[in-house]
Length: 264
Ligand code: NAD
Image (cartoon, rainbow, N blue to C red):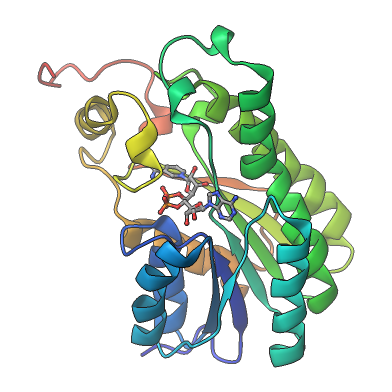
């Protein structure tokens, strides 16, 4: 077991199961000595998260729905009482009605737009408002994005717009919090088969496309995301803030289909 995160305490929001990107990051931090607390959305997910938390020696599990102010207040009040401080926070939360994660972006209704932006973008601001008072210089906030924020990817639609807003939020929050020595970054992860991803149309095609056309010729894993998350949350990244760091097998540098990519 390493000691890179020894003495650090972090809250990880967004573990649904052992495929979750948040779980990859939590496990990587715990393996380096971090103490990790978790929030979960609803009782069904609690049953999935509890044994995972236990496997890394954590019993701090709190319900938290980011659409509910009181639920966020309660979760952070408990963290404040238990720990009195927080060194890092992982926000791995996103949602859009899957009915609109296919077809045309143009057809997105107002309610679906507002819900996607609320849960996938504003919630990072909302949790940061509560986390920052518990943080001191050296604190680190991390969220998760996708290349659909920068360029059009099939079916991502309103989530692409939400992730663009989230990435802009990272930059604004980095400036707001830089003076306090608190860093704010995002990982833009390549596609990974998770519960959230299953809502996206033709996801298997997207996985294959990235595998065949990325420089590394493979898809990323939650361990890849975990390693990069560990770096950004640790003091190794002490000079890094406002960054959107791609963990996508290099896919974001590619401008055309690979000449040796097989047909999908
Ligand atoms: P996941 O389904 O494992 O995690 C999504 C999490 O969001 C779940 O734990 C869910 O409970 C939580 N959530 C949704 N609505 C919530 C609410 N109202 N309150 C509290 N929690 C809520 O899927 P994942 O792919 O690990 O997603 C984590 C993050 O990574 C998301 O922001 C997602 O957009 C991002 N991401 C995923 C991929 C991918 O291909 N899987 C790629 C890039 C970025």
